[in-house]
Length: 553
Image 1: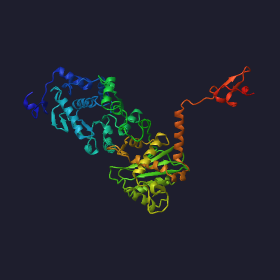
Image 2: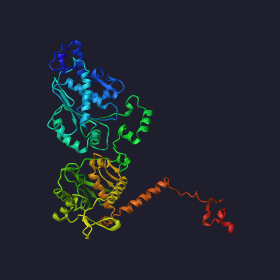
Image 3: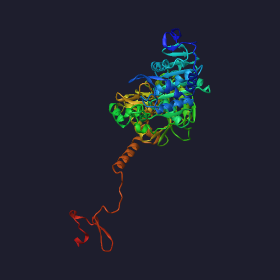
Image 4: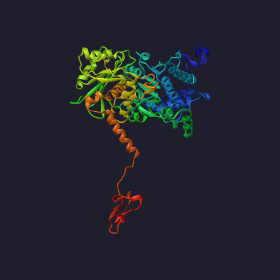
């Protein structure tokens, strides 16, 4: 091939409109590669290895299976450990797709644009090392995109709605999707998913190591239960040659057991210092609401003569934090979250109207608002403008701190509760006990997701970086409220006393796990010649000896 036929002087690339005279063998090889992406990967793809540099791609068994799944199914979701070649496997398939399919749009999306461009770089390296006769001519070749002569285009960008807005794709690769923040993932799918589902052959490949019970966990769990179109594939760390029990021990020694569980065992626990014990988080299961509308999810309709409370956390409505509330049925134990609201666009002026309508529907629920910031405005609108009478107030009582009540006066009384360090600490610890001892139950995905990233920071609890804790804080407020004396007056439920009694009973059971059986064998006794059993303690055992009744006659 002459220099004039090279793309921008790159001898490894063929420019567009370069004529190629195929041999019969090349035609047969081209057709075989088109029909069999695994054969193509093994025969023609080269990758850059840390140990060997540029080397032929020798896929493991599980990598071959993954490529076949990508080829045969439209929607794939893969849960894979770190350093298993997951990105290389997908990039190999995307290369095959671009070369052997005309007029296709391929998106490589990662949590960071730089990561996506690095993946495209791997694809470009593999492309440069294809045989010239197999290559499509190059129309454009950049760090963030490329276009081939057959009309195929590949774009590398961050996983966001703005990055791909207005574009349609034949295939999307979502790399490390679990590490994309929840609000970005939601807006992304809201924007892109309609264009994906409109085609009959469009594909989505979602690959990630777990990172908490977030959106990736939801897609994975739904795929396992057959509730979506995704084909789930899980790869165990032991499927990588060279990884055995010795490697596991060495890895744990150099990291930690918890880190190994998340990154290599692929457990859906993103944090080690969660408020709720990991053993409990693993057992939490979400379900679909019976009704969903504009941020409101209803899990149980109102019941006659039941008592409800609503705890509220207010945001400014600027898309970062969410305004949220939870509706809890407090009629009997266990308490139950029957509805929740979560919206990051609702304005504080409109939020009270939503709370008001839901509270009225749930038997005129008691409402407790967090009023550190804009929440004071929400509580005031509820109480004064909407004239809702069941808004709870708090007053300062010296060393006792804030005390909840309703309708009492005083200089240090406010509508709602200020989230002080004390309130947060007490509420968090109470919530931990209530959840771990099954005294409050819920099946909302977003609540569970937030609790998996609600961690200890600086002697307090808050959301992990890049995560939200608005619903978790609603539950913290609820847990603080139910331990108040006023709650006991409202419901005749003494939470603290009940928890104490149950914990006491549990401790006693743990101290005597096998129990005691009265069979008389543990006491000093004898059987006379008539077969009657006599017990010495009935007559006073003097000095610990065998002093029987007749000794005193």
